[in-house]
Image (tube, rainbow, N blue to C red; front, side, top):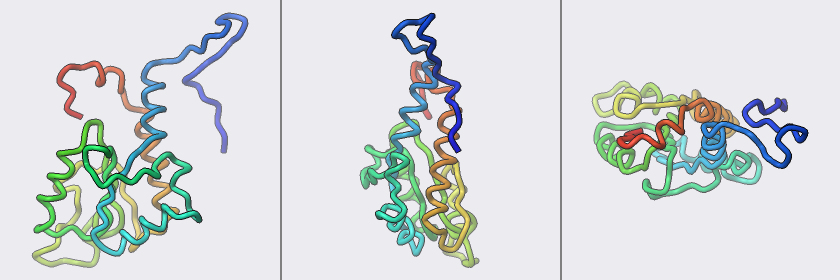
Length: 173
């Protein structure tokens, strides 16, 4: 479904060759259409994450085809799979190395709630160590669910007050 963009307006009789918009709308449009994911494929969900990058599902339509394996070049961590307590500090360290603003997607039942594993070694959700923005349900979730999560992430990014945070001196993200 195509909706009219209410953020940018253009009236040639009034403005001439000028497009009027808000700074937040421009910054958020740029950020939402250039999400660079940091894939954390920890288990079987990682295979479905790889499938979303293929030609059939084409994650590039949403500006997220540039999978970065360096935290300093990515802004969205996709935690795909089972998080153990042994792996948790390393996931947190990678998240801390990402530049602000940054977002997190918990992919699958294991990353969201621990899944079927109720043991001493399995963390019952990555939200215990990271602030999760979007949860993807399923075991493992289909690539269409990943695309749906990216759309939800884009909607969330478009609603952020980014200009105020961008020009604030002590922006922590």
